[in-house]
Length: 267
Image (cartoon, rainbow, N blue to C red; front, side, top):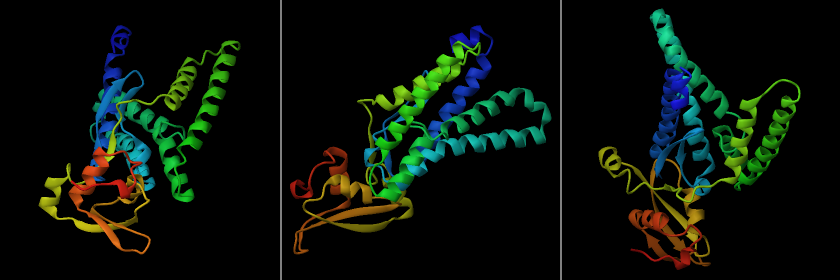
């Protein structure tokens, strides 16, 4: 921001920061609507990031949350266009905001991890293969980032200094390798949406799993606007344990997702 002010680009930097924050807030709102708990939004050199552990997110929820940010930027672009049509004199002040939102939407829809487009591709592959395909998208991203960096190096010898391309390739490469230890992105309905349930009412569903299944298996089935309870059955399909909505939510929040249901205790 200081450099932007020095080079007399402070207003554009401010509008870009606003576009980035609104982008992440859109992710945050959709995540809450799908009953996930988000830890924080952090501002950094590459923009803002909603931190979370996406390992336990269902494929459909992953796609919805990922698309929320770019769609919010596109909506803001439409708002700017409408403003120009009604008040043409506003173009001078809103044009940088339009540029920031348009670039945010286009860049984030690229099919590279950890961009939103890469998360959408991961969700689509997960729906088709019924398994987490994040590692595939990460490998493709790593290869593409190396190719982009090679292109950047070649540009130095041809008189075309593609510095932005080199910076972008470094961002992609670091995004694949870096994982924050503070990330928490937990599916939770009971704790964070209690007021919503009390005001509107919610449909309850009971999930049935075998004793050898894990909490991760249960979390993957928890999608949509429902309250979930759990029944654990043995090989003879006899119920050996039941977990209320509160018990299940508490277990998913506090226990490792690798915990087998036979080792799960209520309360």
